[in-house]
Image 1 (cartoon, rainbow, N blue to C red):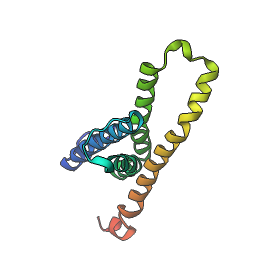
Image 2 (image 1 turned 180 degrees about the horizontal axis):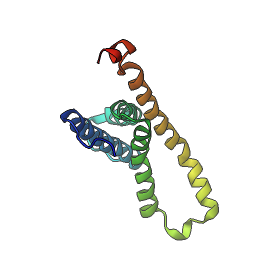
Image 3 (image 1 turned 120 degrees about the horizontal axis):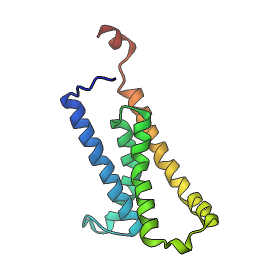
Image 4 (image 1 turned 90 degrees about the horizontal axis):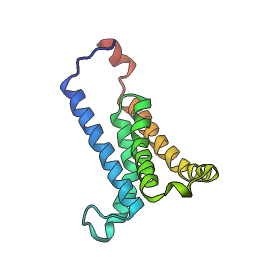
Length: 138
């Protein structure tokens, strides 16, 4: 079993990760349902759209593992898809043929978000990892 001791930095990082995932979820809900959460005027749609592209990269930067980065960036989108389908798509309108069409429509966005999270994690590994000389000193 892994070391269960967590330091103060890990707790702050995990809280920041949770806040970022919630913010990404709010940005997606705002964009998909055309809901304004912050009164920023005519700039709000641009801020919401950019945040959908920037927040997954930041989540990837904060996450230590690649798998966690991908899952946490795609998770708000999957929850939104399930909630939206549950509320707005009655069961009698969904059959096996339409499931494939619906999955094809959302697959691109899911892969984009996962790729942005992976990109953020790769940026973290490149720029925030210890160099070989620093690793040998500690």
